[in-house]
Image (tube, rainbow, N blue to C red):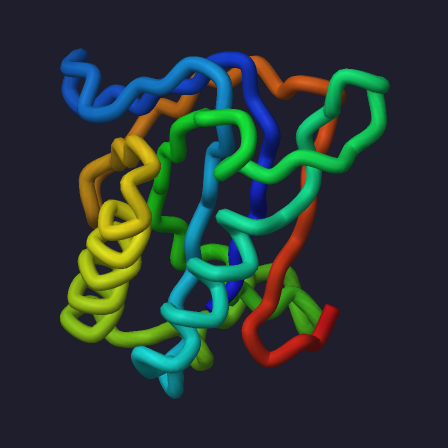
Length: 149
């Protein structure tokens, strides 16, 4: 699994002029699913995200996690995170999960986050979405369950 994580002061997802998910302070997560991903990657990524110390404490240092701040999460599916642009001009997506597998893994990931009691909103899987955000910091991080970066 791959995730682009942005610390936000607000974020929302709109599909067909309807807001499907909206948060204030917290994390916006763009999530990509690899064809070989399993529940093990969901557990790893969930734990990593909710415990990342990327929020400022009272001294202004990035020492607090989402669990410490009481923030929320907005999850947006993004298969293009597995786009391979090394050859040619059109990205290849051969390592991305199939639509059915990705949908199930995405739903399982959202459910795993909800089980942490962190308020969790989401976009709509496989829909054309408009994402609006105010990146706080800015803070943007890349996570990969295969630890490629």
